[in-house]
Image 1 (tube, rainbow, N blue to C red):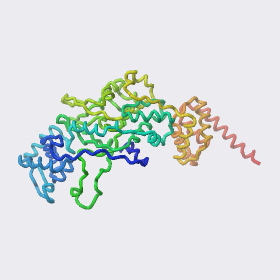
Image 2: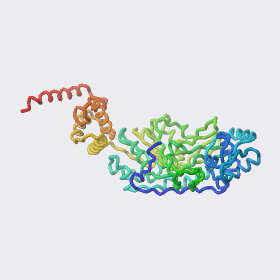
Image 3: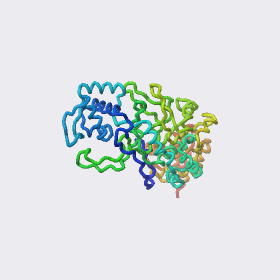
Image 4: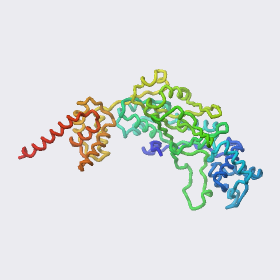
Length: 469
C-alpha cells in the first residue's frame, strides 16, 4: 500500500483524535436500503459463496444480524432459503442455503448487478458522511508545517506559502524547473495532513452499485474499539461499535500522472458484472489528489480543467450512470497540480484563477545545495567534504552553464557509489569519483574535458614521489 497515507501525527509524536464513527444501524430503515435490496444481496451471497451460517452472512454483508434475520425469515417464507443445519445457539448459528426456487431468483438478481460484498450505503448517507469528516476542517500550524517538511531543504518563505494553501483544502499549483522536488512536496503534504477517515465499501445510486473502497488507495487502520484476538470463535467477540459498511482508513492519497485521461474522471462500468467503479477523485474524498506532470497527460490541460470547473468552485462533481441518470457526489479533496512547464503555456488566466494557490518551487541556492549534498552523504554513509561541493559547482555548473536542481546531489552521489563499486574502492568524495559520476550524469560534458582532467591527475600522481624528501 501507498506509504504516503501514513499520518504525520504519529511520526511527530502527536496524537490524532479518532474520527467520529458512523453509528450502527438498529433497523432496516436506518440503513437507508430497501428490504428488496438486502434480500437480493443475501441471495447473491449464498449463490456465490454457497451455504453460510447467519454469522458468516453478517460478516460478509456487514449489517447487524437482527436486520439480516428479518430478510432471511421472509426469504424462508417465500421458499427461497432453507436451513440446512445448526451450529451454536440462536439463528445466527443456523446454516442457510438456497432452494431451487431461490437459485433461480438469485440468478435474476445477478442479472441486475453481480455485486457481492458489504451492503452499500445510500448516496444521501454517503454525501452526509463526507461532509461530517471534510478535509476542510483539518488545520495545520506553522510548527506542524516545519516539522512535516523538516526532511526537505526548503526556503522558509516557501513554507510560509504552503501553510495557508494546505489549510484552504482547495487547490494548489506547484510549478518550477524539473528536479526541484515538486512531487516530493506534494507527497509530504499528503503525509502532513495525516489522520483517519471512514470510507464506505460501496454506494447505492438509483438501484446501481458504485464501489468506492479501494485497498490500493484506502490503507486499513486498526479498528477504534476492536478487542485483541482470542481463542474463541470470532462471532463471539465484541464487535466494534460502528457501521461495518464503512472501513476505517488512513486519509487517502491518490496519485496520477501522464497516464490520466478524461475517461478516468467518470464512472467505470463493467458490462459483465454491471457494477460501477468510482473514479479516482471520489476515492480521494477526504484526502489529497495529486496530478503530477500536469500538462503531459494524454488529455489537453484545458479539457481537464474544463471538466473540473464546477468541482473546483462548488466542491461538487456530477457523474452519469449508463442509464443516463446524472447524480452529484462530493468533491472534497485537496487538489494539487505539479508541473515543470510554464503555467501560462498550459492554461489561460481564467483557469489559473480557479486554482486558488500558485506556488513557485525555486532551484536551490548554493547553501541549500550544500545542505542537500551533506544530508545525502550522511544517508549514504559517505564522509562529507564541503570543498567537494565547490569543486562540482566550479567544474560543472559554472563552466557548463548548468542550473543546480534539488535532485542533483542525490543522483550524483548515487553515480559516485556505483563508480566506487565498479572500481572496488571505498565511496569517497574524491575528484576522480566525482568526475566519473558527473561525466555520466550531465549529458553535455565534453569528452575532451574529462580526458584533460584525468591526464592532469595522472601527471600529479607521477610527480608526487620525486617531490617527496
